[in-house]
Image 1 (spheres, rainbow, N blue to C red):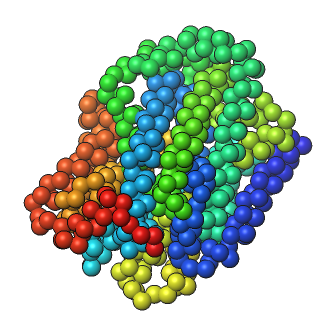
Image 2 (image 1 turned 90 degrees about the vertical axis):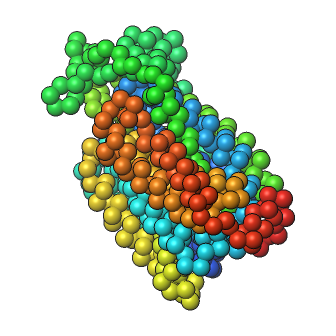
Image 3 (image 1 turned 120 degrees about the vertical axis):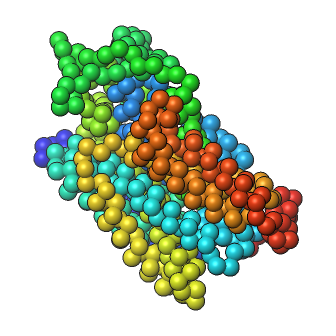
Length: 523
């Protein structure tokens, strides 16, 4: 390990120590009871709510996955995805946040998403709760594995160590931190990590652009690559028999421009639909201390999202100018941010920028693991299996669940050629289609009933798997991102099954009207 590597390691250790310190500080309060551990006692302020929601949402995908897509095939995929995410973020904060904060209190002070859906429909046998918790376990385990892949790629690239060993080290750190601090510690550290992420992105893009000769030089290089800087065309790297991009005369080889029509645009914009079903974001809406503060949170969140997404896309484009032949596979392209950071900054500062990737990874994976663990411990163990379970028993089971989920995530993340963007896109579609339509209908359509809720979740999740694994293989129009057809199918299921079955009870309708009128007392 040389001097520069040691400095990078020191900087990252300092950062990790700060994160652990936050967890230790809030550990006593977090272990007070399950509401404190899983929802922070509904005490988040507007800044923490906004920044932690976005940091936990974006994950290492923002610093590695999105720049990697832009570096590999140009502007179109990355830009339209970013636009879809920005629109989805705004609509989620505007439409869902206040109504959900209010309704979660009315619904017997629900502190998890499955619990909210169950209480919203006043079910006794907890069928909705069990189904929702099961899908959260499935998709968040996949999501957490993408974070472990990020850890593995980061540490193996920086320190030249084996990918698998470094991935496991990162997973263990995330597990220990999540067990220690709970939701409040996670949210406070996510706030800090959101700041680190946006500073890291901004510093690297400015320095790299200057190194590349300015914006003009970067754009000129991008325009010289067929389809690279088009919104309706896609650059196509020419690959050899080993799946690596060909290089001739020191330059990467690209084929003819791929068409990028309205279907492709819709696929990428559909990413925005995922927000309506993202538990890690929706929980922040439920956890804010006052409903009135959500408007301020929305503004803070939007500024962060627009800057971060825009800069992340441009980093990939700058990377093609500075290092055109360094990353020759789609998986390797996701390390372009690391390359730019380590080559543009003094080692110690690069270490703190690398902490930005670690920040993004930790902020997401701890959210995913905690929500998944709460889904099992609070909603299945206590809600279904042992209804008289004490808070201590619930929290013990949640920690055992955290360990099991981490082990499963490690197994999924074993392949070092995994592409972060692809793993995230599947889990994102799963959550968006399973919970997104149900969330919207639960909040805004009084006629939605238990049968519709169950049909919507199963239909949405099932269609994600069916479309991804079977239908998309047909190509053409069927190659569209699975979230869009699954979201539509889930919505249809909710409407049809709700109308074909018995209307909601008078008590459920009264709850709905009280929430709509704003007549809800704090728990």
